[in-house]
Image 1 (tube, rainbow, N blue to C red):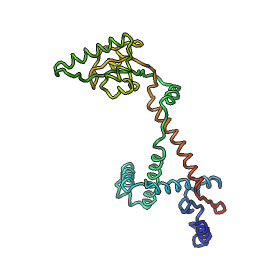
Image 2 (cartoon, helix red, strand yellow; image 1 turned 120 degrees about the horizontal axis):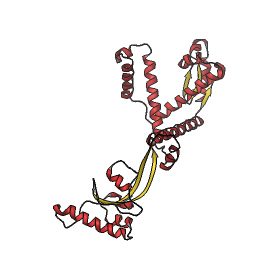
Image 3 (cartoon, rainbow, N blue to C red; image 1 turned 135 degrees about the vertical axis):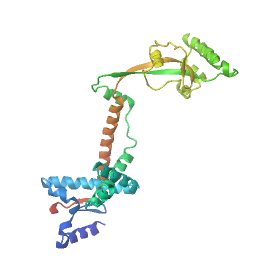
Image 4 (tube, rainbow, N blue to C red; image 1 turned 180 degrees about the horizontal axis):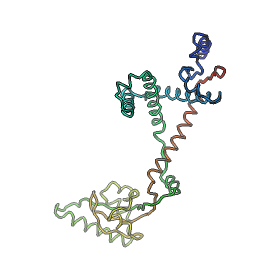
Length: 289
């Protein structure tokens, strides 16, 4: 294949093809001068021209990979993007299609969507640990902090051998009994695993972090160490709880975490593209620039 490409380049530098010479090769694809003419004409130096060509090489490699993974832009996606472009310019799609540059625009849109699909595919598993996000985001200046607590709950939705009318009374009596035992030293975790009728029973009734923003959570936040709460109602039934931990987090934690994930994904993808280059056949014909 390299010999074929080399022969093609030799032929293409003849007078007939002088206006569209091949200036770089990427695997089995060629990059022509015409395809980058506007950018190259405005380049400040030869080094700048090489940077432009290298960016195009990266694009070609990504497009080749998107095709290989069958995640190229669909016709529907391209048409929807073109429709948005026409709307943003206050013209109809038919008018947009009438412009001389439409085919180039269509190709550009298709390429950008394909590369975006590839970026999403390659970085889909990039994430950040909750502790790392908290440690990093807590250092950012913020006007307000949000208090969160973590609790363990025992939730009961029904008690056997009681009529429907007596259920509420029976459940509360049972929870009061458990509460007394826990207050005397019994293990909340053990009781939760044994009696709670909520899926969280498996880990001792422990919840995720909860924002302190309503009367019930405020009541739970006021609990002292190992103090059992009064009985309260949840969407799953009546419950008792103990408070495990508390923390203050930045009010923009979610936004900050999303930013951190984006930056990590960006770096991950950049390194991935560099690896893609390392595995590819790339040739830039510097003497033609």
